[in-house]
Image: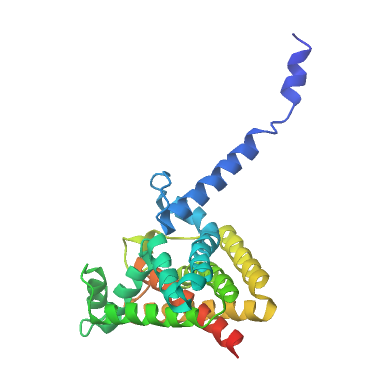
Length: 270
């Protein structure tokens, strides 16, 4: 017994740390899925730290969101034709995400259309549960442009385009969050922060998926489209709202998704 004691104490722990890291990764992925989709995963309230860690997996979850929508467009074209299949694909995008980003797009558009009162007035309008004219127009424009663009793509191109757009658009939201201060002291915009490690993982995932699926040229064009969308919402948020909100984060996802699809359509259609 006495000789076994020192040997046992000298052995370094080699199992517990990997399990801890694995649990953290699994928890962060679960939080990302629960936050960005309607997948029924019981992860509890992640809190600011949970979302910060989950941000690393936002692009991966975006790819998982784009995959069923792309499959719906590709497989449904033979049955319904490309236009109807494209409508179904757009509906899949909305349903799988619980229309989270579309709600942000509508509220952000309503804030843009508010007149008088400055940033406080716009922020109050964005918190109103009713959707105004600008919000309705933004949703209609998004849906019509996305549907018509998908209908103009081949089945294969539509599939990889939606996966790439889902990936890039979620990373674009992280760019917007990192480049824009919070406009409020409460809400998602104030609570959502990302760390350097999460941003690095998200960026590497996004670049890898975009180039792997689309090729170097179209892949970098898709990445540029996502950055452009994030820059647009960042400029809007800084000038008219004083910073980001949960709605501008959602609007960034929706606009980047559309911008990537339109960009790849322009490349592959020419």
